[in-house]
Amino acid sequence: MTKEKTYNFFHQVSVISIVLLISKMIESFMPIPMPASVIGLILLFICLCTGIIKLGQVENVGTALTDNIGLLFVPAGISVVKSLGLIAENPVLILGLIFISTLLLLLCTGFFSQVIVKLTDSKVKEQKAKETKHLKEIEVR
Image 1 (cartoon, one colour):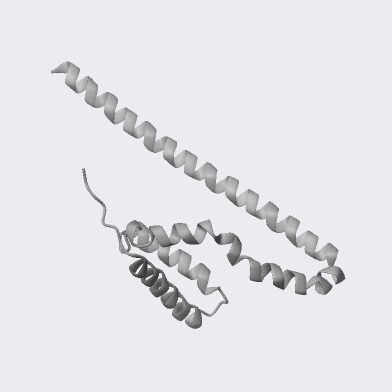
Image 2 (image 1 turned 90 degrees about the vertical axis):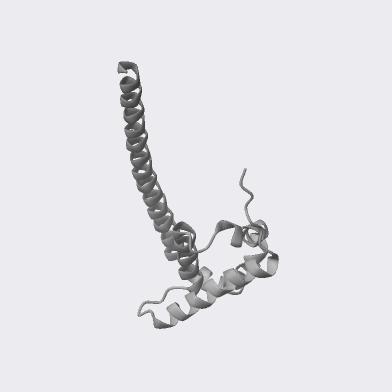
């Protein structure tokens, strides 16, 4: 049984902060406007997938942040309330944008989930074929 190393809170916050700092620097050099938080999420995902950052190095703080995500949306909600005048001026445009963006999100999600299902199905079929071939070889012996 392997025991996974547990990192302290300060170490986990430091890792996430360093990723955010690097993403802020990348944001300042990018020719297109992209939020540093999005760049940071992509960067953290890549680092987790490649093993540069281990899950244990960010798991507890990441869980704490997602558990309290509602608090992080309070400033955005206040900004929406402050902008009610703009929303009242263009309700049709805003509703149209919400509808179109929701439709695009659903289409993209459906497309990518179908791609993932097809990829996993083909890998499962390959694995079953290998197992069947291996079992036949054992029976022949």
